[in-house]
Image: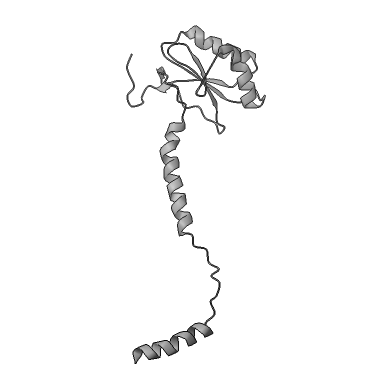
Length: 152
């Protein structure tokens, strides 16, 4: 008997019912994707720093302040020159800097020289950049009080 009642009531309810369009947005998948992206960026952000291995000299100098992202010119222990992470020859340094900066000589440039590189090599690189009109050049060192700082 219960089957007969459900059979009679079922089609009548379905025939008279109209479904409304749901106008709410389900944000759960969106939040899930955003959390995954957040984790991915948190893991990869430290890897995006300049990748040239340079043993920087240690000093007690202050931190360089600024809002714009500087370009990094690195000189490794063998005296090879890198712009960001790309190895370049010294002759192509200025044209590359001009192309990257959009011919703006006020762009900040950080020079990272390995502690075993002769002072003359670092000054040669800085002189070429200064002669090309780049005046906001800073030497980067490691902090003397940083963890793992070697005493010399």
